[in-house]
Length: 294
Image (tube, rainbow, N blue to C red):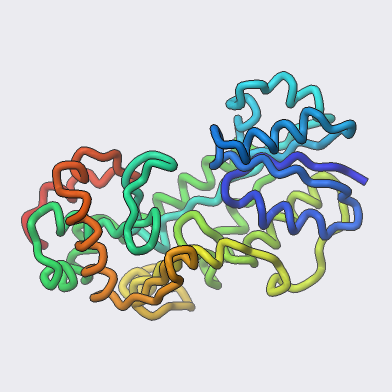
């Protein structure tokens, strides 16, 4: 049996759970990259370097070299293979972060914000006017309809430099079925495919259960809707209501667009325009700040 040291972000838990279902996998140590500089991360590294076992390292590209005691980690690894981090904005182009990891400004949906809502607030547009800005003209002005192509090209480019390639299959799946809660949180079917791609690469038995059986804790986090105009433009055979779900840890509440915008405005009032405008935005909003109205 093979033992795996898995280096990944918030995807680490569902992928690890899936890998453990293979009869050829013994242990999986999860190294949560998104929790660097926390006791949880330090304990995971300690468990790896102090283990009496040897492991196959499965990582996002460059993950191991970015860790301070990488030489100790490499000494525990028989081999290392890389795979692609799924981050795709084509379905949810309106989403953004404010601030760096673990220092982010929160919205009613946790780390996630609407570019339209933020830009409207910072431009002095009131909440009711902001709600009216969710339309085709706005999406066109903010280049949302270009996101699918641009994000696809970026994902495929990243896939060229990894051992275990998943981008092509992910894009094909996304053309035909729902694959994302948010731009970086896949649904179970994506993790099922990723797990089996990893298992195939390291010559281990696949998981033949349906994806519905998979454990995916990311479903307890935020859900972002697929805007009707985005769905039509990309000819997606699936859709959603124009509703937003907050993380379970923040109540797991469903918001209408009106409720989401007004609640976001209340959050921004507490932070203030000055601080919001000085924060790091991801992705960069560029021309969004230059608008007066849409």
